[in-house]
Length: 298
Image 1 (tube, helix red, strand yellow):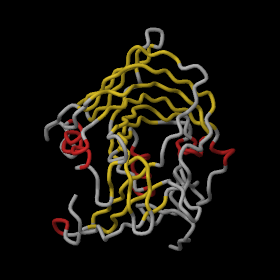
Image 2 (cartoon, one colour):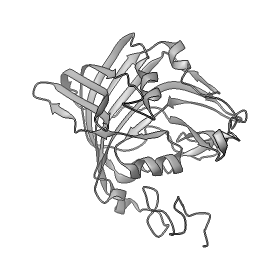
Image 3 (cartoon, rainbow, N blue to C red):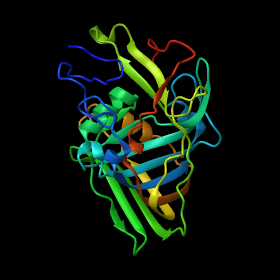
Image 4 (spheres, rainbow, N blue to C red):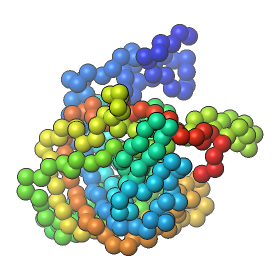
């Protein structure tokens, strides 16, 4: 088996280049024409949290940036080129942070976890981007814009661990996508060994933020078409779980359920059509940590 440095491979190896959002089955990149147009539909809810609680979720090198306002997003990506027109549900929180690496400082939004509704998206994003992805089931959003309401849920094998409800939604005239900030994640790959012996093979930050030397990609630069946005009020709930309900992820859900909501800072529902390639994350890059974290406890 011969490999080339510019081609992506994933387990299982031996079957050639791994097709996905960042390359085709022949190992070449998707062209803009081939990626077409994708659609997205999301609700987003912002709330003021408590700094001391959020700080416990941050790996070494991170600190909160500005007010501890958490943004939680739930929705769907649809008409994806790399899935032959299919799509999947998504749920993730974002925390405003500053990260101090070995040679650079980055301001952005830390994503401690993301749930997705398709194994293909989970595997490719964990392996290639370093996103902390978990699997979940998503029902379509229940959208009733005539009455200004949207609801949505996320579950796992019948246990609903997240729900959101928006009300009083009114459309924003001439709405534009918010600028946003670079997303920052922590890639961690444990080393194979008895009872975790040896720590991790990989423990470092990844981001799509533009680097000083031109790597990565600037946030908020992706063009959008057909963008519509409705704003109103909303509430969210992370439902506490037991081992029997979420055997391998109850600790994650409960960690989020334990966060206090001091006050809600607004809610929105939006729809957009974007060039298909913007979902690829091909600008994601490594940020070297200030210290070796392969033996750190999290």
